[in-house]
Length: 230
Image (cartoon, rainbow, N blue to C red; front, side, top):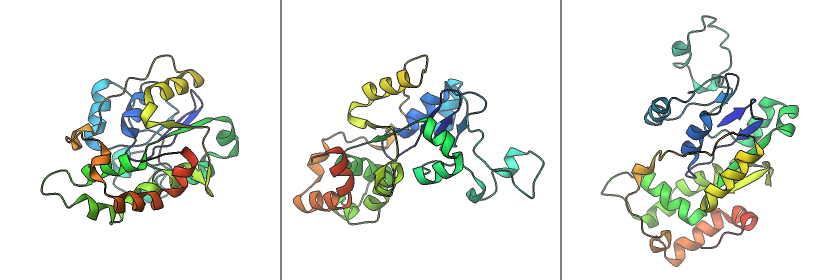
């Protein structure tokens, strides 16, 4: 996630919605006081190679370590992190305070849940032999995915952000965010994590009626909110 005091926006990072690529792109425009949470080491390498700002201002002071040694701090538990990857709206609101929360532009990205589950399937099982997609739908992962989507950008079941960008219309929606946030250049998204899925068949080819209905039930509230169809 990113909190930009420079451009007065909060980006809440949902899962399997190009969030890491967006974080990297946004990092280019962040200032020294902005919050940037850590991402996976291989993705940090992309960010570093591009010359963008890396993780900063995301941790809370440690009561037993006043040395300022970041490397020592990073060895501690994430419980000391003030902000972290995939932090939900409720936690971010509590930590930034009402004035920032009410006055900053808050946005996230949502994606058709049937398509999103196929993406998570390939992220979870990176090589053959993979379990069947049907068994994946029956596992804990679709529910976890819902919690890192609808459950992340809502509070008490209501959308808590100013804009829910569509993964299916991402370029246009991010351009609207850029203009709204006075970011000086168009966001250029690197292809982070795209290596996991090589099979580019339509997500519809993975589903039978039983799997369609199970995903519809798990993601019912998000489907109703955003009008997704299989």
